[in-house]
Length: 610
Image 1 (cartoon, rainbow, N blue to C red):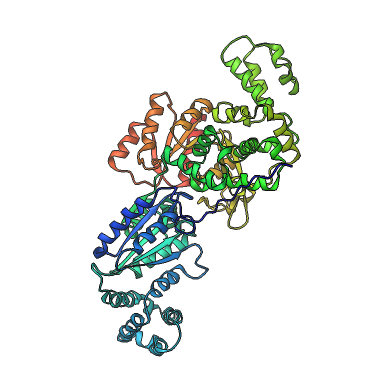
Image 2 (image 1 turned 180 degrees about the horizontal axis):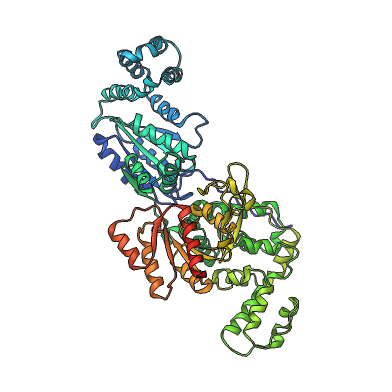
């Protein structure tokens, strides 16, 4: 009997919280940021944002920064998780977290100062007795907040109370350079918009006092949208200005370089015990298709580990083949669903045969009729006679995913790599599909329980709200807005390196009948322009750390012959120079108004009909 292999699941603990190996190489970054904070302690208060997308290591950097600052004289730290801090007001929770960092004597001095304020004397009568009692500090702080919350005017004076508390705390510091309190706020971009605004208000209106520095872990684009939706700041420029008043300095975590990403993957594979199952091409595929996102890489490896522990029959088929199936499930989910569906027998050979026939037709050579008789016969078609229109007839009978994936070299190489095991893999999946599902990737659940489905475009997966659940989406189109039949059959290419940011509007467009093709950058967009010939192009400006990538890409597309309409969908406030570039490239925008995008597309349809 073959002894089972031992593979282990990777946890999602941030660096410094049970994950001691610095695979992301952030220790030096944390050291540099700590030096900046310490050197600037006399200019506090200020706020530093650690900016990155989901899963890119924000919490790890915060933990490493906390460890680094702990070694500095006079530096104290406080943690506040905006997402998991409970149902209480974020304003209340954050202020209490700060007050609880002080000792009883500091609170007592603050209460004496408060009692001298004429208005607060009545509202806080008896608090001195509470502070002098044997109750813990937490009880004192709770009592303080309860008394203040009963009176609006008292709440308005809380900043003075906190300034007094900080003054007393700073006065007790005898260390060189003075005291400093660093407050780490994690997972702010996961919160609802109202909670984001509460935290911003706490920082700016109540805790903007000497001796305090805030470090926010957030995706600033998510904060910008939350502020625009929930604070009543409808104008994009005003929303940007609002956040600029909160955040004085921002560090954007860059995506790992090719070498760093490979080192990261190697580290995860070693820790999970799966190193011997991933060759260089598979590692490269993981790196590129995951967007070099550490959390997504972990999820893929964990999917393999769990599936193997649930189904040991893969030992006989080959664990390297299970790895490839997991890759199909994560990166090509629509094709994987076909592969595991009993109605689609022989899918891999059929796809490869289609690929070969298509290549033969495209190259203009003589088509070997006998070689394709089985492929055409299985679809109820007569054997080909060498005409190019026969390829079109064949593609109409094949799954829609075939034409979209046939030019994806990584995908084709993945299918070819199954080799002699192809039949065994297909039989296994027909008999017992993978038990591990990808609900967060392939099917998402909205806040009120609605579902969003997946559209497969050129090998990429994106989630769009289903029509039955459109009211649960966060599209800012008017409630009850009818579906636009005029947009049906329109094809739009949307270029953005963060497609989830646009899923609400993209979902609405899909419901209207628009075919939305997704591209994350120049290479995918160029291929889609050639292959799909879209009617219009939507684009962002920024890709990673390049603020003008969208402009540069469009200039390249224009030089290569794309002459179609373009709209920049972005909240970036255009400078005069940027606006000049937009005009030179015969583009429009920018706009961040979904209604304006829909109206723009309707105008394109109307002008085309005229």
